[in-house]
Length: 396
Image (cartoon, rainbow, N blue to C red; front, side):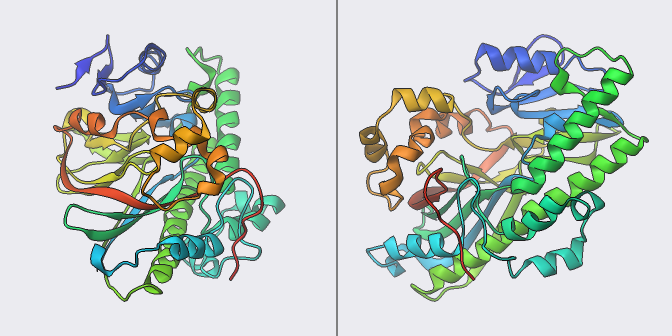
């Protein structure tokens, strides 16, 4: 059962530092919070609101609670392949992903992604993007690209030795620009209304105002952009895998973990913001990834009302990126990734993603047995991440 932290916060995390605890308690004091803030087992400090939190608001949304990577999430595809069908050397697969899926800060397709036209036909182009020359140029080229940081593409095996592909990404530059724009507007609205907040990043937009309506339009579009971008990259990644062996896809799971949507809980219609948390309604399948190379879990939601039918989104950071760079070496990184196919030549650039800089995934899972049940445990064979050096642009 969760621990109650003061008034207004329920905590599932056994690994929670004081900074994140204090931040969650501050968030719970904001007037538009309707109910309690739920901290997931991987909770850690974030901008404005704690990463790994579920925040219920009444007729308002806190844009920084959604975050700057709107719609960030994970897609996983189960294939009919077994470990015995894979070649001994998986380096060609990793190289193929590098050629077709740009990864890293500032790297995207040289031209508009072929799937962009179909996305726009279904979801349109909001005025906030169409009217911004920079976004209008970048959105088509960043669609279907991985990004950097903890975003990744992996080939994994489950406990049956069945092959899965898993990919973590968000809304790239368009989501970031739109999010920052609305965070600034929320702060301006709070100043004009002379609303006192425990943290300026907890500024909210009130339902029924033009600013709120504009945010929801951009929010929903950016969430669709992230979802569709993951689908596009998974299509490309699967095509490269088929060059090694024929197979079918048995199922695909595509979850956001930075998003907001209207939901009904305890008889109340609320805006539920999941900042580093997944939806875990009864029977709903989800993905809980670990840190680089440590594997992941496929889970089924239990619909726990105390968590607003939510669960952890992965293994949250235990150390900042700067702390990790100071604490670990290239040799440490190579030891941690032993036995896996990865970008070993970029080990120095990836040190801040070393698995030991993250919380222990098995502890996270042990903390949420009342939120989800385990369906499959995945172990990593191939890991592809973006790095902050060189040029790695995709081709069509």
